[in-house]
Length: 416
Image 1: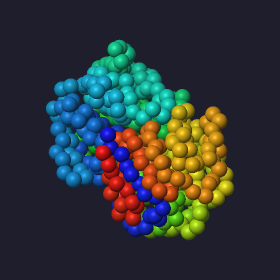
Image 2 (image 1 turned 135 degrees about the vertical axis):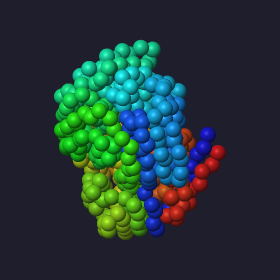
Image 3 (image 1 turned 60 degrees about the vertical axis):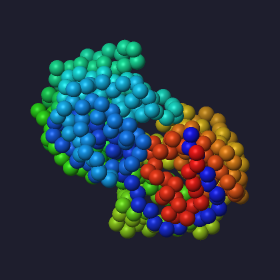
Image 4 (image 1 turned 90 degrees about the vertical axis):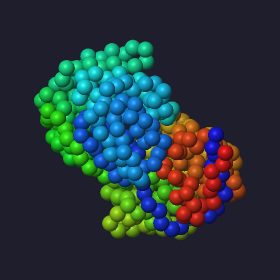
């Protein structure tokens, strides 16, 4: 099993290119199931989850021509409508093949998903939505089995905001008979990126980016070329790392408009931020100030940045409150941060962080994707060596993170 060893204390300085977004790439890859023609995707990140999704699509009969950072998918040979457990257990996003398969082929069998153990993320929203569109669904032997001659347009209200639920039903509705309206829909930038790709394929979608998305079904979708949006969570992670270490970094090929709440919190912590086109420059002098964080669905503060800001608050001046409202089990990094000397008290969904002068290196264990990034940031600021175990979580969502951090002057290496 691989680990990361970090010698802390060096401020991050320099430039780094931001990769394509994992959370946009995975649903857009599934969109290749909606057409027999080619879907050419660029700015595709080199991530474990992307590789898993590609294997799943290949197993179903989609062909994929690979080049660096891009793939051309073609779905004219799909004959297998099943997503088996061994392909799905490490990646919850595999549920996103359900809607496209039922919409185009009228049949789908998808294993109940796995992924990070950060809390309950029920699939019942996907199931209820497809049932409202006329699908017959059975749960048997750990699989969701859905059938429909042709899906029908419907008005669907989400009890809770669900990104993958919105994406799955939006894809399903593109080939349904009639108009589908998704209410209380997710507004994340990745949902908009998927809608942009689907429109390029001939879908009729409006309202994406708001809480009401309207899709008018068409008979068939065609091929298209689409560039995956930059990863806002990778961008935020590097910015927080620079702020925590007292560094000065420039991010290239990113977007400030999808990072507004994160940039506001970094400014509140004392960072100086300049935006120039697709570049963001952050400079931090002195110790960061503690900032309160409360996660909520977009456009509020993203849950995927909560752990990174907690690492920043650990060495910040003052005390802060971090409130997690999305996932009930997303404070598993707290115990590991305490091993480094952090002072954190947890009660329910709230953590109170008292900033300390410094952290001390130790061996810690990653428990999920964003907790891994949090521990990397903590290791970068800690005195001495920090060794992070179970970093396979990191490889699911961060493209070559140790080489990118090394470019910025971090003393970090991967060990077996």
